[in-house]
Length: 167
Image 1 (tube, rainbow, N blue to C red):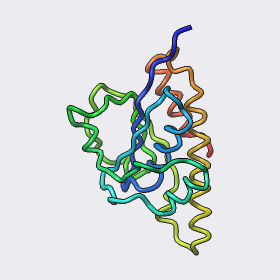
Image 2: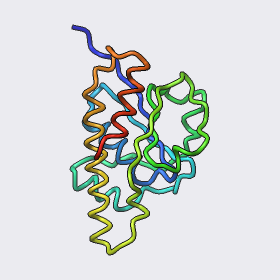
Image 3: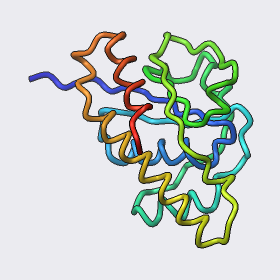
C-alpha cells in the first residue's frame, strides 16, 4: 500500500496570535508526515498571545518556532505551495485574500476570538481552552478524511461541512 502524500495547510486569521496559531501547532503535532501546517494573518499582531502559549503548554504541545506573521509570506515565489487555505476568523474570511499559488482548496471555519474575550484572567484562560477544544475537534475530523480519494469538489464540501459543525 502506498503512503499518502503530505498536504500543506495554511490557517488564516486577522491577528495571527491565537486561533490560527493553535491550529498550526495542533495539526503539526498530531498529523505526523501527512500534514504540514502554517499560520498567518492579514494584520499580524507581531507576537503570539501569551494565553495561546499557555493553552498549548497545557495541552502538552510544543510552541517553539511559533510566530505571528503576515500572509504575504505565503504568496512569495519561495513559499510552500498550499493544498488548503482555511480562515478561522470571520474578519479574515471577509477580507480580500491574496491569490494563492496553486489554487488550494479554501474553506472558512469560524471560531470565537479568545484574544478579544473580556473577563477576569481565569475566564480568559478558560475561553482559550474552550476555543482550542473546538479547534482540536474540527482538526481531528479533517485529518481523518480520505483526502487522496476525494475530488476537489468533494474536499471543498467536506471542509465546508466541518466549518459548519459545532465545536
